[in-house]
Amino acid sequence: MPAFDLPVHDLERYRPALEEPADFDAFWRQTLTPAANPEPLLDVQPVGNGLRLVESWDITFRGFAGDPVRAWYTRPARTAELLPGVVEFAGYGRGRGLPHERLTWVNAGYAHLLMDNRGQGDQYGSGGATPDPHAQAPGGPGPIVRGLLDPYDHHYRRLITDAVCAVAALRALPGVDPARISAVGNSQGGGVALAVAGLVPDLAAALITAPLLCGIRRALDLTDAGPYGEVAAYLAVHRGAEDAAYRTLSYVEGISFARRAQAPAHFGVGLRDTVCPPSGAYAAYHRYGELAAHDPAREIHAYPFNGHEGGDAAHVRRQLDWLAGVAVGPRA
Image 1 (tube, rainbow, N blue to C red):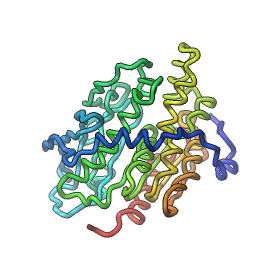
Image 2 (cartoon, one colour):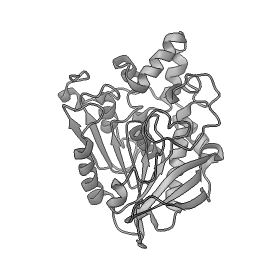
Image 3 (cartoon, one colour):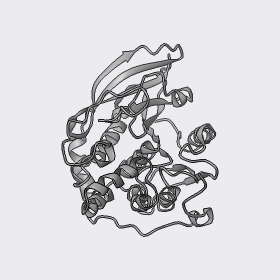
Image 4 (cartoon, rainbow, N blue to C red):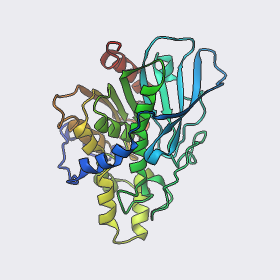
């Protein structure tokens, strides 16, 4: 698929106007305040992973409405020192899988928490273990359209709340430096990591690749692929529901979260990405930190001949080098 979005010279200056709800901040304060808990962890159990150099634990923490959310916690074996932490968010339709699957960050020396996606895990990968007991509102079967007609019912209100709670959970685990926690994700995970950057003011860093939920209205005009196609398919049946859907999605718009972010950020984007159009990532990048008291360090890497996979392993190497140099920082 050739490049289908804006030319790169336009992307490098792309800073679109944003239709943001006047109560965006109040909505998220009202959502997150009840979820804050001084004891976020519900259960921590060691699990075998078949590996000698890495130790794993099955974590359950309190998420949206106090619901139990599962995660894998992994750290280098026999390491007693206080480690910087990485919270990773999985892609659309994917669960946390198995504890030996995601090993990049732990092998780089980080304490790694991989959050399960509530109500997901059935589309690919090795499954999930976190149900979504609140998914009864009108909407389609896919996560992005569950509760689409009301922002208070929307799936991503719950998932993003879980993600903020996941940061608190990692900070509460022994052997983790709470001042050095970073958020990482690709695709849906990238959109969720960006939301966390906008909602957790003392995050150490955010690594955001091919983010979903960025430039949502433009994406719906450009592509029928992936989750955006599910929104279009829903609206093709529920004619006249567009205004309600757009209103709901405006509360999870990644550009709005980007404006509020304060942590250093590292973006990656494939210019032939038809799942999450690159203009959304660039818009979030250009408006990143504009409401912060300081101008956070940020950079973006584009891959002209790649699609949704972006820079793949080459980009991961860039992330490793950047995080080690920018966001690890002094120990607490």
